Length: 404
Image 1 (cartoon, rainbow, N blue to C red):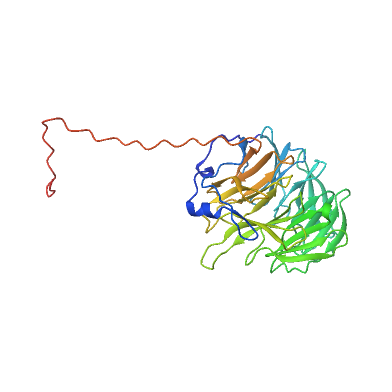
Image 2 (image 1 turned 30 degrees about the vertical axis):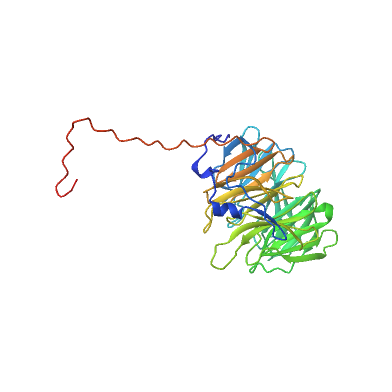
């Protein structure tokens, strides 16, 4: 089944001039507070090469390792879609709502490209506890269910997961972390971060196998663990008075990027920001301010030189957005604003040459190696002068009670 390839630029996808006050906030600032000037007008960070649509708004995106496929999760957290990125053809759609209340908040392709991995929600009495589901890239049917050895009665829902170099970390029930090797999908270790699911469940995880690190977010806190022996090595506050909404590792140097809201005063609505932390944890290296809502999705380019964030329009936020910064300087290198309230998503291709993002149900692919074409300015309004009365004509009489 093919998707309809969209060629229209809807009003909700405009990339027009931002308000001057917003432009002042769109700046990257170093940990010491020095700010980089932001452009008043935003342009996309690359040339649009493809545009297609999903049956409903989307929540997350992931590229296959060769860049030929793009997978997405619906905003209702029940459907998984896979497209051919060259043609825009929808390869398949699978319903992953195995039980009532099941949610899919993230997904990824396996390294061999044979399966799409999604979290699994089961029932509390299941033994063993379900953790991940592998869907065939050919047709979307279940290839395998990955399970733990937890006892009956455990809260049986995988809320977040991450893959890296043969290792998978899964947040189970919002309170525990299961570490799996992805060859035979064996459970290697369970970690107990000491988190209350009712107070602040695990909202995001990231894995850096090369540097032996697992990062997890709970509320505004971030914990770092050693993958090899299960030791906690750092714990720091990434977001004050809010929740970490996204968490990714910079593959170039192991630095950690977090997203969340920033509230300057109690009277002001929260604004979004992205922070970059040292690989060891706790050392703030850079803050990338959005001036808008808190980012709902983060992505880092494979070479570690760019970071992208996305969000939908939310209560108290004037616009949704997609923004791309230079990692080192914090300068905004491109972006767009829009009016769609659906969650924002963004993902770099494995070679770093393309960027995928969604606004509502629309999926757009950009070629980052080519600049976006210049915007065509709108023509100025035309003023039609009044037609003069013929010479010698008598002016029309004024209505009663009106003095001419």
